[in-house]
Image 1 (tube, helix red, strand yellow):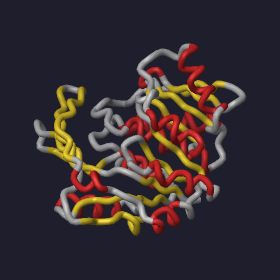
Image 2 (cartoon, helix red, strand yellow):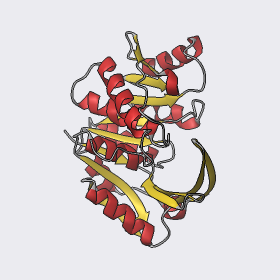
Image 3 (cartoon, rainbow, N blue to C red):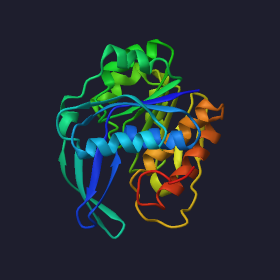
Image 4 (tube, helix red, strand yellow):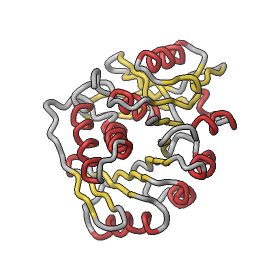
Length: 266
């Protein structure tokens, strides 16, 4: 089994800590899947600056297939952040080479060689999904907390596993929302509720996901991406929805205990 993550990468730089790490939804999900034992590829574009070299070297060291991580002339995307206690404060985002990211026919053909491909709202990869999905490769999409974003509707026919971050309750409105997405194309639609767990609909029933208290809370960056990584590893290894939710919750509880957006060891 093989997975690929297609989309964004950037550097998060914490100004008040003078500390940084390579990240991005595609990066975090890919690294966590790799650490959980699934060979994973990254399909993206980074810059020709020092940050881009750091990105490539880091992902290669983590064992990812970086054959389709292109390096183009320009600046690697960077987000300036601060950490105030345990609260993240997002500052300026400089898009750099991500502003012009595109995916070639070769990139798409490579993605289709994998069992599952994951992307996200800011990955700029939505145009690749019809061909990837038509090939028989499973598609996963993280819509973050943008439940009403136009991409939810436009990508729906090409997404098997959809993930949504909800700030509300596990009430009838979110249940209706998840049921609607499965009725119109998804295999499983999942909403996460932070410390209140998760909820999935698979067309037959709702599944409640557990919460595992973190041994310590350091930085919540990467919790959502790691949850998705665990869930997708469950999909590939044949878990039912309950097992997928459990895997996601377990890895997320580990990631929030480290500063970086993935665990140091699997």
